[in-house]
Image (cartoon, rainbow, N blue to C red; front, side, top):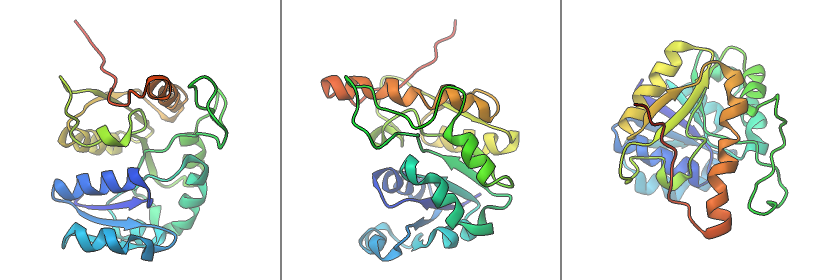
Length: 213
């Protein structure tokens, strides 16, 4: 599992692509317009390449979905059959294109629905795992915090979640496996809670930690 396809030309995609390169993976970063990534590729080293969503899906052992939540289903569709049987780490959140209310971002999903479930239906032969969705991009890769924070994941495929756990361990995270895809109904709203200190006080450098006796 040394070839990673990162779907998305924004900051989340850039941070995660850089993290995988740092840990020795071959990375293809993808965009609808791959030429937009030319400057990133020129500075990223020999293990970095760029392509379309379909190119990256075919290239990768593991695909990372790092697009806006509103574009996630379309991005999955643009991968064509390249996601068949592939592990897909879903870093998206269903944030709506409306302003926050008193620091609380709006979602386009309801309490008994999740974006992960919609994506799994869109790509039924892919092995989706919710991952990297409960923290900001600045802390996704080897965060400098007083201890190892907790990353909440879920998905229907146990082997895919073990691959995610291995990556998270490299990236400095403890993994909290919350079960099947329906658990994303609880994990995705952690984004709302995580954003409130940032929206209200400019405090974006924090993460969750599960404590046990």
